[in-house]
Amino acid sequence: MLELVFSTVGQGLEWSVMAIGVFLTFRILDVADLSVEGTFPLGAAVAATCIAEGLGIVPGYLLAIIAGGVAGAVTGLLTTKLRIPALLSGILTMIGLYSVNLHVMGKANVGLLQDETIFTLVEKLAPVGVAGSALIVGAVLAFVVASIIYWFFGTEIGTAVRATGFNPQMARAQGINTNAMVVLGLVVSNALVAVSGATVAQANGFADVGMGTGTIVIGLASVIIGEVLFSPKSFKTSLVAVVLGSIVYRIVIALVLEMGMPPNDLKLFTAVLVAAALSLPLLKTKLSARSIRG
Image 1: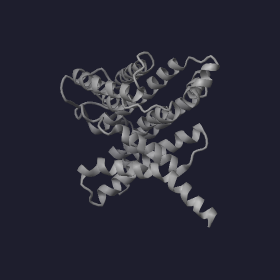
Image 2: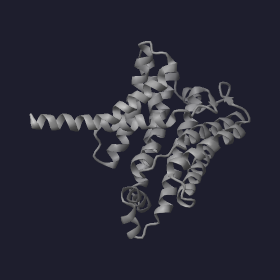
Image 3: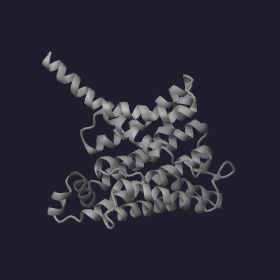
Image 4: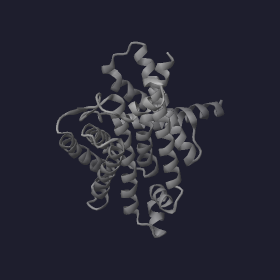
């Protein structure tokens, strides 16, 4: 039972990096970016191919970050330069990345069971088992990413990105190049999503061209659950809430699977869960209004 808990929390931490990326576009930039469904398997494909070809774990992560950032830049340029709506730009990038991912891997999937990954490396350094390595890798990755993002968005450039998402008209009046900030925000977001994809691929032992399906819903579920349960009041607490929301989401998924839900129904359950989480703020407002009138 303890091993299941460690494994589930570890998965939540691994996916929380992707959720932070979704949070940056959804909440900070106020952009619905669907390209994450392509950049998640892109990060997995790049990292898995690098590891399988013997280049190593670190080059795999670095190339995954670059690839995800480039994909995010494509979405940003489609939005800012060609004036294509952000939602459609993300869809176009996502569709294009399907073919890119196939070219990167050379086939539909790449196995890593015989290769050294970051998880097997941790198991060699510390005899913690599979579940323990998942927890350690996830915790370190989530902490490092959240710390870097918190630092970055406290800088002048990061503040400009936040200002662009909050009030683009006022940001332009202050001399901020809002188009550049949108592109930068999408680059950072999709780079994080690619890092998460690279980690999840190593955790699963393979990278698959279809592993990005439903990624945006999982990311939104983590963001919304974190906001509803923990009511963050600042950017720092928002990052913490997203990480905890990802863990809670994974725990809920593990529980419903233990209760006998067919795996084929997980996507439907996630959609219902996100819809329910999105409606909670409205329900809270209505209940509080009724209590005041009562």
